[in-house]
Image 1 (cartoon, rainbow, N blue to C red):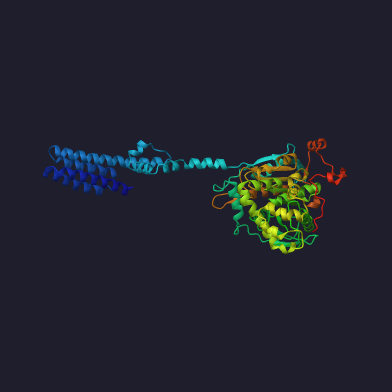
Image 2 (cartoon, one colour):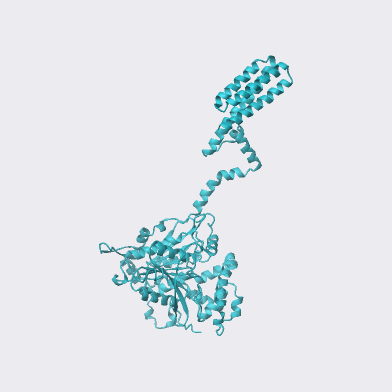
Length: 576
């Protein structure tokens, strides 16, 4: 502060000297002597200004008055006027500069007239005149950021049946059993359902979220030491499952276990898989098993049979194997993208006999034919997403092309395929004996089996997902099943849901972990001590509605197999 005062009064003295010098150059020698005396006194008083600003100013003014008083006539009056003007301007500028700074620091915006009358303000006005948009943008930037954040916040929207099932609860301390409404139980046990998703400010678009999920590997995060096991299918094919933790670290017991299914051409190495595995195993002490489909995650293809959205036999084999190793452990499952479509198909096919307590579907396309139409019509989907996914499928196929040499698959046609539809047309439908690729898409769509699921399930989708698009979400089917709960957010992309600025993380990981843990904790007893593997019971209202509905299907009463609805498995051999 003393430096500022010293500089200010030095400028005042300089101004006074200049004006006094101008007066004495044109006047008498007597005025010149008076000016020299004033300069001497001013220098002396300037050195004293470091100790007390106001005293320095008074001494300076007195010295000037004394010097001017020694002058005579009109010449001394002119010198006095010049000096007083310079001193007054300096004091006003100094005071106004401090006031200007204080107003900016307090968040106030001074008027232009106020700024024009201050030294600091004059510089601001000059800068505004040279770059007129900078100051308004900086002024309203916080306001714009607040509005943008409010616009991008995505509350969780829930869709469910009006009369949901009741979750069976068991209190291990008192030994008493009770029931609670499925939706109310999840609202109580899954707090993330009440927390809005706030995407990263630089990833508020579904395409950006999807791109970041695809290209960000998170290699230095979610380090999982898997224990791999290979299983042989009846046709000679091989699938792999990765256990976490290994049986060396955690021997087989009744610890509840989560089974995970990856997306298209994915595996246990995917970041969305590893993030959830780390949360469930390291943070909560549960066990996880990742099911890697044929030819995925460095699993060799030994027969000319890949996997597709309708093929559930491999998953059924894996679940039976897990049940053999962990007979007392309760099981839950979660699927991502195509894996969630396979999981929902499996759940619908198993019905009341399903080994899982419940399931979670993330980024499910649901309607594969509708997804195909979207991939062919939208610009980015046609030129970016579909070729990218088609290329991933071709990479897996061409790596094992020798397996298909003596089959009806034209390898050259596969090489020419660009989009995912072209690949499915020349490979998938032929391998799984569908007559057209659209028939495969229709019969593989899990939306047709949602009403047959008899275990509590959660479907999590983002409405701006460029792959699993909003208009393919089977809202009516989920609302029509008392076991179902659909949670949607306006933003999140495909398997994205990234939040945070410098180090984004997936918001969906927490909500999935909470739902899974809620199902495990409803009844902590092992399988042998639980009366039923079904953790829920239907209400009387649900039973009454089912009995009155004309949509209830009795497959056993249908003699003609050609009349069986498309929700049944296709009656065809897949042997090549």
